Image (cartoon, rainbow, N blue to C red; front, side):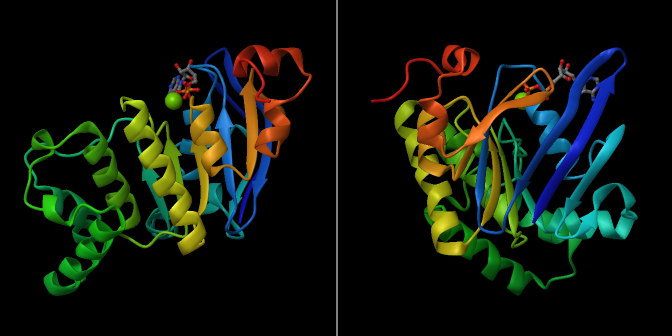
Length: 242
Ligand SMILES: Nc1ncnc2c1ncn2[C@@H]1O[C@H](COP(=O)(O)OP(=O)(O)O)[C@@H](O)[C@H]1O
Ligand SMILES: [Mg+2]
């Protein structure tokens, strides 16, 4: 489903990706943890074609992302939802209109069909009653769920989560993680998640990978990685779980 094959990417003299490699099968969930500024968001941006690799290849559903033309790239982006680190909602648009935006911009769906689809994803994130509110009138956790609904509205088969817990208290963070797991279990969503939360990783990961200095130090089932003997992995993730 997703293949990131020996990818190199530098910005000036800064080598951010140095032979980065991973695959994600359909319906599986990969969680990436690693220090701030190590290049985790850069990995996600390569997946949606916002950045191009210097070397190596990225294939998504069999297609080489670097070789897509404009139409191909637009199709790919409809097929991939992206939950940004900060929800990135438009302040002067209602919850409903924020979620409808990707449909209005990238499809020719009728208003009736748009309404139906938006209400469906609002139901998935349990926010039907907030549809006419403005982003400033709802809590941070609700804003995050609106961001999630917007990422889901084009019916993507892959979803990318960039620090979904950022700015949330532990309770809301847990609720967002559970929602992510539900999307995987009930809708077979394939996902790549970047997070600093061990709880989020334990809730959603099939595979947990720790990224540092351009490469993955380790990757495997979350409990295995959390109990790893690797000194650096232990330092980064904190005390192992019992
Ligand atoms: N478009 C860009 N141009 C130049 N440098 C960038 C760009 N995007 C990211 N970087 C740099 O790459 C490094 C990794 O960034 P990022 O992937 O955002 O880190 P994080 O792991 O915290 O998500 C940072 O040093 C950042 O400044
Ligand atoms: Mg980041």
